[in-house]
Length: 568
Image 1 (cartoon, rainbow, N blue to C red):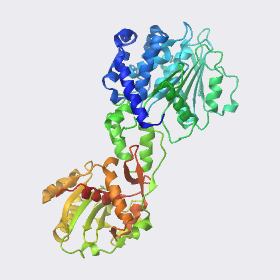
Image 2: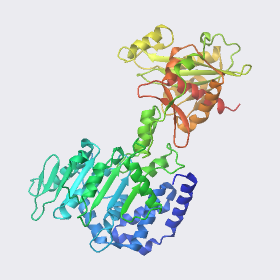
Image 3: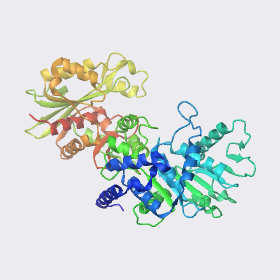
C-alpha cells in the first residue's frame, strides 16, 4: 500500500480500534506494569505514534485473544535481562527495560502456539540509530545460550565483520561480567562456548560468504543492519538450518539505508502487509518506527515518533542539533533521513544553477555606486566566525525593468588565511578585490555592520535585514544598537521556509530577471549548491559536499524570502 489517502484512512481506523480495546480485560499489570504504561501512553496520543506502531499494538491484542500467553516466560526474561551488565557511558551498567522494550520482548517470547511451541519465529526491530537495539538484542543470544536447547547455536551475523562484532562483543563482555573467572564459558574472538554440565551450546559471530557455511543447526539468528545487505544468501543459509528446532528465533535489527532495492526492503514491505492485515502470518513480530505520510522532518513530534528512546538513550537535543547540521549539505541530510528518521532515501540533490549560468547573469555594478536615488533593497547575512567567509547579499528590485539585482559582499578573517586549505584561492580573490580580508583571527561583526549601515546611508534604502536566528545573536545586538532593530528579520533555515523563495528566485532567474555583481565567488557558491527536497516536497539549496561553500546562494534566497513576506 503506497497511496497516501489509503494510509491516512487506515491510521484513522486503527486509532479507533485501539480506543475500543478494553484494557482492563487483559490485566496487563500481571505481566509487567510497563507493558500497560506503554500501551496507555500510545492510546493517549495516537497521533504521536506512526501507523505501524499502532497496528502492532492492535495485533498484540488479537494474538492475546487467539493464543496462549505465558506470563511466567516473559517475567523470567525480564528478571534475567535486568541482571545483566551492559556497556554504558559510565562503564558496565544494569538497565531497566523501557516500557517499549517490555512490549517488544513480551511479543517475541510470550505467545505460544502450543504448550511447548512458541508462536513468534521471526522478529523485526526497525528503529533509528541510537535506539540501543544492538546491545539489548544481545541479551536474547545469551538467554538462548543459557536457557535454550542443550545444544543451542546462536549466530550473530551482519553485512560485514566489524558490524557483526558490535553485537558479539557485547555478548562477550556481558558473559565476562557473569563469569569473570571463565569457569562456565570459554570465550574467543568469534565464538563463545557454554561449559556447564550437560550443555554444548555456543554463540558465534558470522560475516562470511554464505557458500562456505554448512553443517549449521541454528537455534537463534541475529541479523544486524540487514538493510545494508545486497543479498539474502547469508540469512537464508542460517534460517534454513533451523528445521530441527522447536523454538527457533530470527531477529532482524536494522535502520534504514540508501539501498532502495534490497532483500530487506522486500522483507519490510511484506511485514508491513502483515501488520495491515493483507497477509496472514502470526509467526512474525514487527515493530516499525518511521514517519507517517504527512510528517515534516523538521518537526520535533516527528523525531519523537520515530525515536521512542528520545530522552532515554538519546539526548533530548540530539535530533535538533543533527537536523541543523544536516541542513547544510546533501550528504548529511541523507544521513539524517536514513539513520535518524529511518527513511529509505538516496541523495537526490540536483544541480540547481551551474557556475556558468550564474556567471552569465553577472553585471558590473561599480560596487553599487552607480545606483541612483537610494532604491529599496532587501539584505541577508550568513555569518561565520573564523573558519570561512561570511556573506552579505543586497537585492534591489528595479520595477521599471522588473529585474532583481543581487550584490553580495564576502568577508574573511585575515589571521585564519595562512592555515586554511583554500588559502591560495582566497588570497587570489582578496587580491582581486572580490573577498574582503578583515583584521584578526575571527570575523569582527562590527565591521560588517558598518558596511551595511554605510550602504543604507549612501546607496540604498534597506527595508529588511534577514538573518539565521540560530547563530546571529552578536550581530543582531550590534545592528540593534546602531538603530536597525526594526528591520531585523529572523529567517528559519528550514526547508519549509525556503520553498517559496527558492521558487521565486528560480522563476525570476530562468526568465532573465536576475543579475549579480561581477564576483567569481557568486558562481563558485552556486556551482557548489544542489537543490534538495524533503518528504513533503519542500525545497532548499544545500551543499553538494561537506566542504563546499554556498553562503552567497543562501543569502540570495533569503533576500527573496524577505520580498515574499514584506508588508509596507
